[in-house]
Amino acid sequence: MRCLVFPGQGVQRPGMGAELFDLFPEEVEAADAVLGHSVRELCLHDPEGRLGDTRYAQPAVFLVNALDARRRLAEEGDGAEPVGCYAGHSLGEYNALVAAGCLGLLDALRLVRARAEAMATVRGGAMAAVAGIGGDRVAAALREARVRNVYVANRNSDRQTVVAGGRDELAGAAAVLRAAGARAVVPLPVSGPFHTPLMAPAARAFAAALRGQAFAAPAVPVFSGVTAAPFEPDRAAALLAAQITAPVEWVRTVRALRAAGVTRFDEANGSTLTALLPAIA
Image 1 (cartoon, one colour):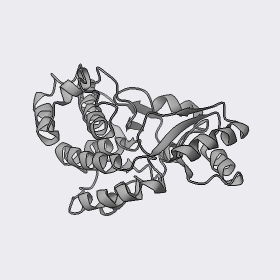
Image 2 (cartoon, rainbow, N blue to C red; image 1 turned 45 degrees about the vertical axis):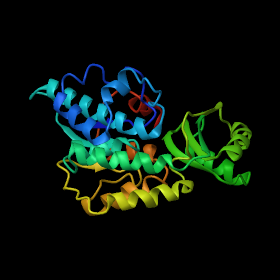
Image 3 (cartoon, rainbow, N blue to C red; image 1 turned 60 degrees about the vertical axis):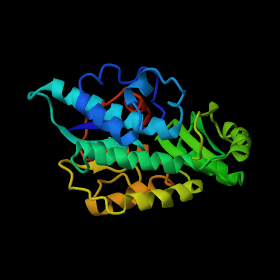
């Protein structure tokens, strides 16, 4: 079985989507109307340096993910192996839900805009990529050293974990993690401690934006990065709100997809996630 996966915030880059915007002019125009700015101008030129801002980066990545998936599937034609399930890393889950028919493109874009705005209000924290050890070892090291206010945020592979927390506490945790076997602890260019309990105010604000949003049953399963299990429409809003404070369980999700029969992973908008697969036992 084939799975199409979608990356999240962090894959934004100058020139992103250059080959896509002219292929989907109606979708791009409608997205501009929702966001109040030109996504093309942001991605291709970024004259005001906003592509690194969560409020602008998340909607831009979402739209480019969506357009790239549409182009990819259209170019494959009728003889291609059908997609049997979808998954996304954090923000990428919104693309997975759109691809599976749970949400319309513009409804999802409105949610992404609200999510980005809510997440951008929580500042003062930081995130760092920990290379060489998995999430369980990272969590144990932090616990054994009694490091407070630092959490596992992304379990990306057996050898790559992201931690997040207070800026000062995270700086102090680097030595603990190196002593536990990490080859490197690299700060990430983000504005907040995403996917940790410190994001609770953003989760509450976003939960309000989710109220009243209907989710259709998916045409094929969409696996949640919170539970590593398929989304159910009546739980989708709760999972998307929880996603803001919960760690991204990418390792568990990939293992669950493989257990469900996935033997081929394809990725929209790059190869960030598929590059992690060899390091997930």
